[in-house]
Amino acid sequence: MSTQNLKDALATFNKEKSFSRKGPLCVALVVTQHARQQGLPLDPDQMLTQKGGQVLGLGKGAVQTVLKRHGIERTLAAEGGRTSRGSIENMRLYVDFLNIQSGQQGIDLDIVEEFWIARVHDFFAGKPFKLRLDTSRSLRTLVRDMTEQAEERQKNAPGMQYAGAVLQHLIGAKLDCALGVGNFTHNSFSTSDSQTGRAGDFFIGDVAIHVTTAPGEAVIARCRDNIDAGHRAMIVTTSRGVAAAEVLAENAGLGERIDIFEVEQFVALNLYELGRFAAEGRRTAVEDVVTRYNEIIDSVETDPSLKIDFKK
Image (tube, rainbow, N blue to C red; front, top):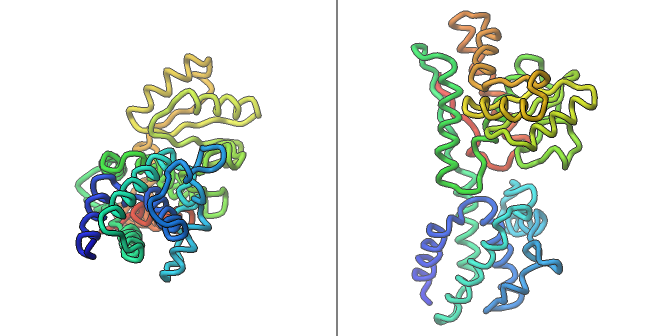
């Protein structure tokens, strides 16, 4: 197979199977290494761990080893794509692709690896969300713009929870600006409460704060645990989520024990307070929150496209 034909086939596969996200990229890099070591064709059933629940060798260490060989020091995924529910299916798709290509006059795995490394560079260069401060519009619309952009991006990248990540870190940035940095710990969006033993997304004083775009019975159960432990429970969610959270809380007998806030109001009111209700103060408050948000993304996330490009 000619170099150009192989590159074209890879580009088609990448586009059709949506392999430019961090989870699939990790799968492609690791499976390509298996192909180097074992040769082609590969048996997809042999690419699974003993219990069959994960892709063989898929993890942060293996992925970073490949990236470092190409001079990339940044972390592509904290778990190397291992925890992605679609990793096994992606592995099977990619193994099928490699096997088909190898049956057509062979395949140069150096070119294959270089193709995926180029996609990693593209991923790290992903465009951030855009935020423009228009003094004629309400502060609530700033928050709405962010959530709408995240939801739109999410539609085009199934399996990626952009909206949830943006909401969590926006609330975290707002709280840092209001209370000062260092009063609580920030975690990546993919880190669950059970993994860390934490009471909620944020725990400040005696209050456990849960940030979610789609409140379900699980978050209500965590609120019950908070209350049973002697803490106050708070849910911050979207306008659509407020009604759902209130119904679930009532059904659980916790309607009067959980504070439920709509995120646009929750953030906008604090921006007014931080800006002392003055025009210049509001501009400074928004800029401070966005700056802190981007710092949080740099420190706990691996996807730079979650950052915000802010223009006053």
